[in-house]
Length: 291
Image (cartoon, rainbow, N blue to C red; front, top):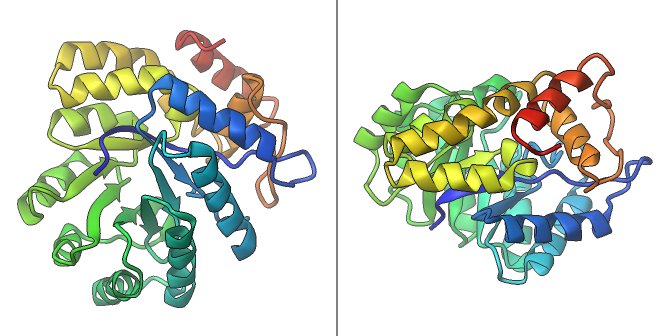
């Protein structure tokens, strides 16, 4: 359903933490104009953990409305409570989102059977295409390829975002899952190689600040043009690294503000990028030709 560079969009905020809908409009237009393939609204980078349920639904609905069919919208609807994940996924469906992205339940550390039953329950409750999201570095929960394979037989579970950065996982997923099951990288640093080895796209933090380059790199990688893809990715490598110099989305929100696309707003317990870290992110932006 989706291919290429998919931006994990920040949720722009005013300095008081209120959602900035004018900046959201600018960002959606920016990505449409830059060749981004799809938008993930209210994922990890969109501060899903700091928005309440009503705000979560509002941002999804606004993003879908602003996209206006020009670009697909994937709604982040995962939660560590199955009932909450169902509620958020219903919200995404009613808002007209093209799909939902559901992170593994965090903190409570379910078993593999628990993960299977959690995702099965959401898929059966809400008839919208759903993408699994495995990011054990943030959730303390690792969904194994064998569990993904079990879930891939459910008709409206259509893909997985694998954010471990372990390229051996890709081979295991390819051997366990159907050919039409979408495999996305969630790790910008290894995404180019992930696609060159047969992955279908990258759900990207870097695309927030370098969308055109990310789109070009993904297009080349998906076409198997290794030299071209790697040359573009070399320019992006410092961004892939420095946008994680502090916890995501702290650095990327600072970078988007430096570009004049969003005010200086982030919610506690997240804090603004420190003065010591700012030169590192700025230098990476300069290398990519953004500043």
